Length: 257
Image (cartoon, rainbow, N blue to C red):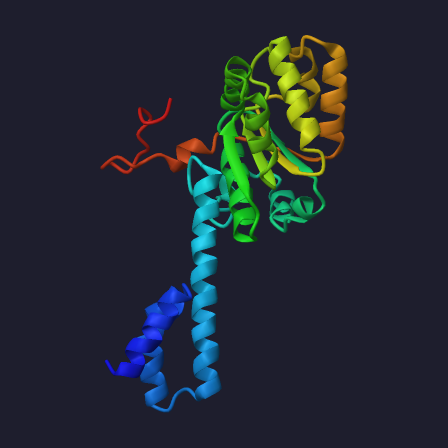
């Protein structure tokens, strides 16, 4: 390493340009070999830094999303059931709903792949630079309930309002208490113009009786449903296709309950 190389490395460290630092030797070799001119050398080094920063930012957003699984739309098996609305789901993959501040509701029986699709759409959003948060609806309600108990409710709901996409998995599983209904109302209201992805075993029309106050139900659900893309996912369970194979080649039915 020459004195000039050493000085350049120190300068890059001071400027926090480690992307350049990581590829400097390879780029210098290309320059010395005549593969890169002066401007090309600088441009390629800058692109190395941009790529590194984009990768780090993507990984950070992916970690903050708290997905249960790292799944993508590309790996979903749309041939598992002819009843799946494959064209509609692929169209959602263009993320026009996200840019318009609209929401997505995925509903249908257990096991058809709703959570996979929800997380896959979230993964696409992360790839495009969006901030995403995934959680079971019951966990969100528990977080907000804890906020009432320790007086951090305002802080907790701000954290849920902040992401560009909030994924509420297993929505409308059971009857809600008055406090839970009010918390959901506040959450959806505060997120006006920001996207939600909701998965549910029940059709949206069946959500209303779960709310103890019909006025709250009408105000919350009408607003939510009327600004959402509704996807009916039907057909046989998608889960058996994902089960590990036994040595005999058959799915191990004891793996999933």
